[in-house]
Length: 185
Image (cartoon, rainbow, N blue to C red; front, side):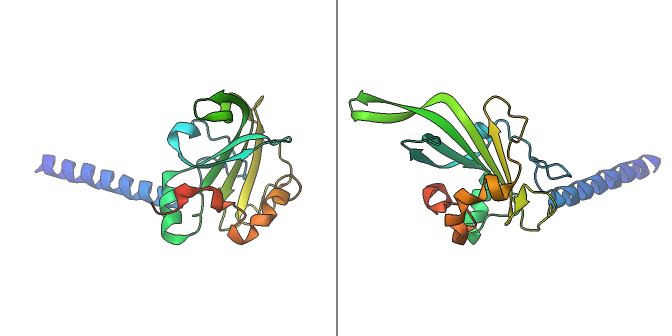
């Protein structure tokens, strides 16, 4: 009888821990954001996230390939609702490009190992960090240079980020037309 009581107590404790873990997980916002709203670089995103699509910018400071990634859960949610879920992460990696002649054509551009910078956006549907200048218009914004992934060099999303995204205002500030992965197959 004592052994049965012990098992029931142990089972009850395990059940309670599972319930608490589910509540905490359901309440979790983003593993890349701390309590102050600091966005941390999502290391390993190339293998842990889904590739949404790529842009190629032929000239200028932003020239190169812009490869964009997000979580698989974000893709699934977007396909169902047409919107980015709260906590969704978008990572845009800007790579240096080169061109060469191949059997497929002349002047074929390709991405190299050279990285210029990364842009990170975290969807914030609840406006959690209203006093933080890197949060607003439904997103958290970050910019990381290749030399230091630990330092977000953006200081204000309004001056450092929003200008490039305003043309996509009707699409939640994201150029979704370049992300075929968000469409149902």
